[in-house]
Image (tube, rainbow, N blue to C red):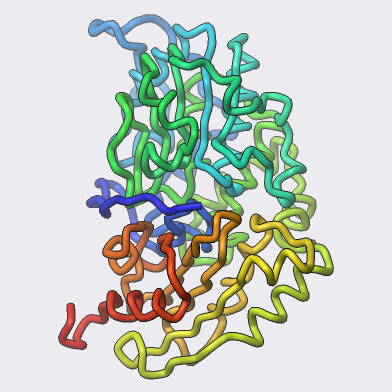
Length: 407
């Protein structure tokens, strides 16, 4: 499972910088680096459907003057072609949805939420992600999975495809070629390392989660939030804010969470599925990983580096699948003596997926981009072959600390 190549983009206007939290694999690390200054007075009920064509032939946006307080989407920065996206979706009979390989809560939750909203509009909807086509165990509670189909069942050249939470087309895995052949491709994403693919872009590195953008798209399509749609969005929002405990958890984030709870989400049930359950074998794998952890106090400009490894054999002997290893780094990053935490996880293909986290003083995103990956300042990743000690050597050399003479 490899992270995308890519570069950080300049944040759009109208946002407040917070914390960076996604690694290159799209995995949650506890929020994003920027959140919108949305109008707190936004009503819980969705706006009415867009009506009538605009003079340029696109769907006419809601009138801010006639609708009262501006909707949250009116404040979104980045590359956000709302009108064109709405027009394409409204005119389509079938919409194909894809998200990045090995989907996390934001990718799968956002995709299934949008799929259910499109189905309520009478659209034929297919949803998928590239091999391995297996829903992670912690996400099997999400509603709407009847929309999922094997990747090879997706049309070879879709009329309309929507990519969700993928920073680059390569992150779609075996579905990347179909995305390239799509007549129209809408990209919905919030990664700073987005590679600017797709013809219609709802991309903003300022958003706390892709779910934030999907909720706005659903609102603009005029679909009311029901419990099933809201649960997918809540899973995405909670995943990318670290269960609302990271600095990106602003009043606006809670405002959205409140609307989702009003629609019927049970936060205790979602939290239990995402964070509070694991097979006993996982605890044994975690114990082994923590026992192997190494602390290098002089690394990262003297701010400290803590790292560990999880080989495929470590999890195979405990019957723990790869997709259940995501939470290990959350334990490692608690180390007081280390600014940077790193977990090297051996994939089923024998490569090492290297997840990195920082607390704010080191830009791990830049380091991971240098090594062929991507992500954000405080959360990023890359994939590499070779021995773990050699990989750590390369990462150690790529780390940059302001004022250490290497920046």
